[in-house]
Image 1 (cartoon, rainbow, N blue to C red):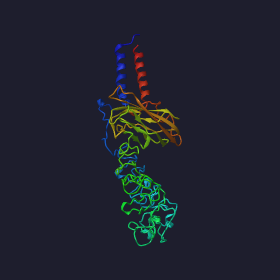
Image 2: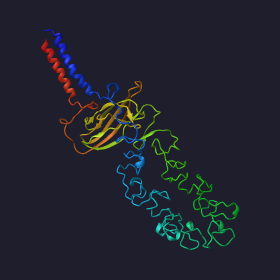
Image 3: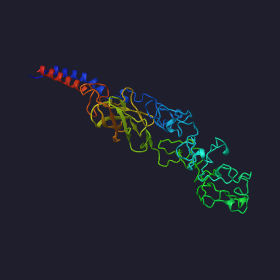
Image 4: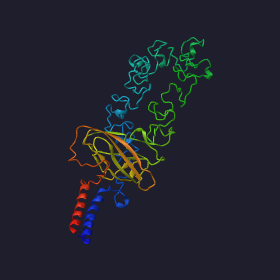
Length: 438
């Protein structure tokens, strides 16, 4: 029997009408012509969950509100209440708001038992900075490993304003080392660099050693502060100790670092390349070919859902993306795997609200996830890809019969479980209608 045209066409029409809205649901919306807003949050700073250029350590606290802007510390703990977060405090248990560290060893003076690094503990150091003899508790420790004390007054020569104890300050004493005026001891050169500590042979043209205990024959002094480069803890004189200065040889007191690579803008000759999540080897060059980045690695518990973060070197571009599991103990766990986005702050993309790609591994093990993206407005642009590692810990959650499963890279993005089965059922219904028409 020949098929009845009217019934056949009706069956296919029913199938098409039923399948069309479901297919629309299966497509991850976001295209402007589809009426879906791709940038549901304003571009700028402070967007929760998205990396901001004003949140250097990516801990959710903007730099000006962060007591530790260069150390990841979401809780902003500050045990000693000195205004410096514990993670980046060089004395977390002792208040030291200025973070003074005169020997540059990473341990603040407030808690360093040998603050001047002369191998003599401060409590027994005759220039230890805590003796009443050398100016009281607020006096700075001074490096003097030999503990010399010419006049035997208990105050080491390195910090004694009157070395020979004659009541005349060294600065105006014609012979600060001795009353004898033969010129020998008056021009002592303990570091042997050719520049006496106090050069008094020619008082009218005095040149004293700018690092009396450090060999520095060329007397370099970059910031011209009177302290030679060989012993100056702040070479450029910008108030930031060299150990913490992102441009130690170029004054930059504001420490601006636009691309977050740890090198200040003042001395960064490598060009702008925005560092993602503090990972120096993962940066985005806006002048380079279209590229995307995902976080390098992530540790999660089985069953926990995490949003998959997407970065690109194109700001506020219209992207189409797809996430896929390319390796792992399970091929399921992805939600909202595909979609579009067009809003970034500045290089991390915001997903359409409610359509954020996420991954919830049901089995423990190591997974490799890949993101692929294209520029919707530039069909000629190649597809950019990147991979990330997810390590899942814990026990198996649920089973394949109960989880909302999908094949590797399949799109479950619009929350249409069993969509393929439904299409198959509709196709079967259409075939039955055609058969009956025969």
